[in-house]
Each structure stands twice: as C-alpha cells, then as structure tokens.
Amino acid sequence: MDRTYEARQHTKGRGDLGRRVAQRRVELGLSVEEVARRAGMAPGYVMYLEEYLPNLSRWSMARLARALETSPDTLLGADVETPPGRSPTFGRAASLRPLDVEECMDLIRPGGVGRIAFPTEGEAGPMVLPVNFAVVDGNIVFRTADDGVIARHAAGYVSFQVDRFDGVMSEGWSVLVKGRARLVRDPGELDDLAAVPVRPWAGGDREAYVMITPTAISGRRASANEVG
Image (tube, rainbow, N blue to C red; front, side):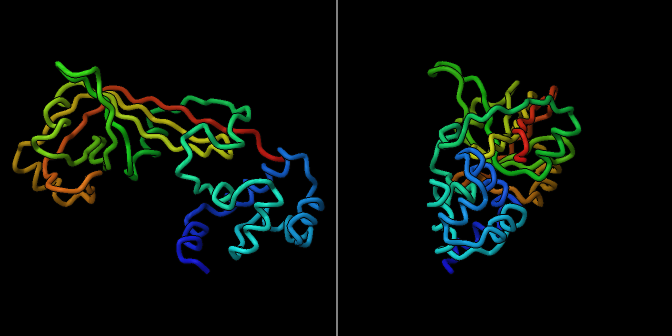
C-alpha cells in the first residue's frame, strides 16, 4: 500500500471514515445495499466500515468513493487543497454552541497552527499571518524573525485564532484569543522558552519569541446532526 495513503488512514480518528461514508450515503439517498452493489462489496462489510476504521486498500477505497460519487481524499478528510467551505458536501445544517474558557483552552493547549492578526502603521490595513504556536502557562508563544513584520508590528493588542473544520461533516470549532503581545527579551524567560517544542512556520533564522497574554478568550463549536 502507498505509504502516504496508509498514513492518511491511520492519522484519522477512529470511525471518522465510517461517519463520512454514512453521511455521504444518506446525502445521496442510498441504502447500504445500494452502496454495496455499486462498490462490489458485501452489505455487511459496508455496515461494518460505517462503524469502524478498516484498513482499506487503495483499490477498495477507490471503488467505495466511486460508489458514493466522491473522492478517496474527501472520505478521508484529506482534501487539504480545497478551501474551507468548498467541499462538495459542505453546507449541511449545523448547530453552533459557544465554548467556555476552559473548553477553549483544552482545544488549543496541544498547540499547532494559528493565525495572528495585528495592525500595521503606514501599510495597507491589518495583517493576518499563520504561525506555529505553543501554550505556555496559559500564554500563546511562537517564534518569528527578530526583524520581521510580526516583530515590528505585533507589540500591543492583537487577536489570535485557532480553528479546525471538517467540511465534509460540517463540523468543527473555532477559538479566538484577544490579548497583548510582546517580544520576549528577558534572558531568564528566553532560557525557559528554549525548551518549548515550537518551530517557526517558515524556515530561516527565527529566534525571536513572541508571547501573547490573553485578556479575553471565546469560541464556538459547530456540530452537524448525527446520521441515523
């Protein structure tokens, strides 16, 4: 099996593929038996893969995707080249639930990729840039170039957003952090941050650390109706 394809299957949460298969089947108005006939699979097997995450071969995944009139990447949630909201099945009704501060922090505490928004003077409006971040003692921390645009402009009040969305399932979450950003200059703080496992979004010499101390944290979770 192709290593990249295999990795995509094993990086998805257990049952994600099955949930997408079930949702797509319902959207097309197909029964389990009809999908099985289209894909050349046993109905019992289609029912099984809607509940679990089987290790499908590339050939079996291609047959299943054709039967559901979609692509293997869409079923795997790996269609990263598609802009958010442009998935063929995006747009199902979803409910929005506000998240409290603790829920927001639980979502962003593992770190990852977020976007910092900050004003610029004498330039064409505010900027929004992606960065790899970590959460340290409740603060957002990331690395940047000491003479870069973030270091020059992101001292003061900023916004920081992190989100995860599954366009196929019409569900996900978004967290917005508002706070005050500063370049970390204190040698003791820098020594502590040197042990933080956060790498810069871009390559090159990016040894400056920016810390955002939150003043307000809010978020929302979108949840689609479960497939019956």
